[in-house]
Image 1 (cartoon, rainbow, N blue to C red):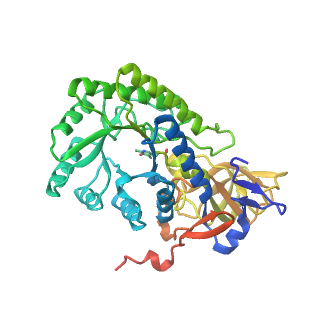
Image 2: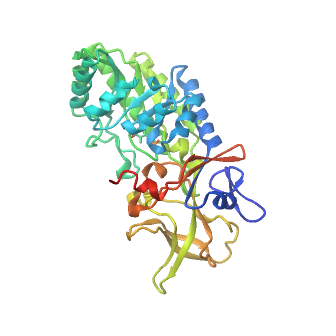
Image 3: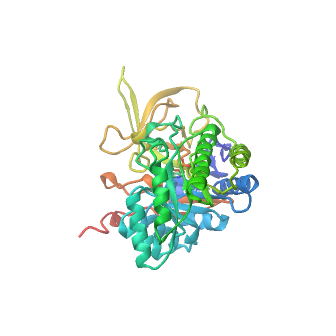
Length: 433
Ligand SMILES: *Cc1c(COP(=O)(O)O)cnc(C)c1O
């Protein structure tokens, strides 16, 4: 099995976090998002422990909320002592609603409106991660009106291509995010921040991409960022307190994907950073990382019920399910890979047929995965499991075709409970006048 929270029981049913998924489908219906809470906590602890060992007590991982954002996630992050990244008033509102300490929250986004900025300050956001000069001016202006001095980090683009998908590469010079070091814009926004009386520049942030397996990417970006910090020390007398290296560690969607040892990777990055700081003659800043996907991805699994099976002789076969791009748009967006199997007959694979797993939306692009193999006798009513859906599935879900969003059921210590209710038809019309 691709991940050790999966197993198959004597009846040939797929179990997740030790619980028979067919029983969960019966109890809650499909489509159904399942999340293994213990796995999420385990991943948080891996980051916290490794980062403290590598960088000392102040170092902290920040969970990138956008991977999966709902109240129970923020309760877990609060209990585990994680900081969080947020990108909207909606994520802030959700975190605040369970009493998440917002001084440990970092507000990202390449376009924060004045209303967003005001809302975040109203709730005592810890830091803004500032994308550009216009935003900086707005934050300074709104902070002045509120008579506060706002802590910020500046988002910089170190100019690295992380060799992952184009759509999720964010650290290149021509990215829509941040200020580029190469063009001199990073230095000029740094100097500008220091001139503003309601801004407290605490440090720098970079994020080079997602689904990164190569620790080299983090070593390279650390080198560039530390070099920049040294330059700012020499030219502007700036003491940088925080360096945030971003998120992006990869997860396994397929058996063929590499396995990554996050703790070992962080140790490597840690040793490298200590040496680099010593070489440059600068103090070690507080190091942050912002994992999203690698915290929640393999803690998630989606169950669907098979409906129509269409065989077009000489062409292809389709297996349609009761969900699709509305609950998982990642194939439509990026051609993302997923492992798919029958949850109610997980061991029957002697005779298989090749098919595309497609959703029920009125779009030809509504595909979950192409060229997968399922048992040859796959039929209406069978239960399909799509693995590793904990990140960027629920958080990207929509009501396209007026489909209701599935519930999120948490699995913890052999028990199951609803974290997010299934949307009702009435919910769909809640804002219609
Ligand atoms: C998306 C994002 C992350 C998290 O990336 P993952 O690949 O999910 O770990 C971290 N930081 C920033 C700024 C992001 O945009």
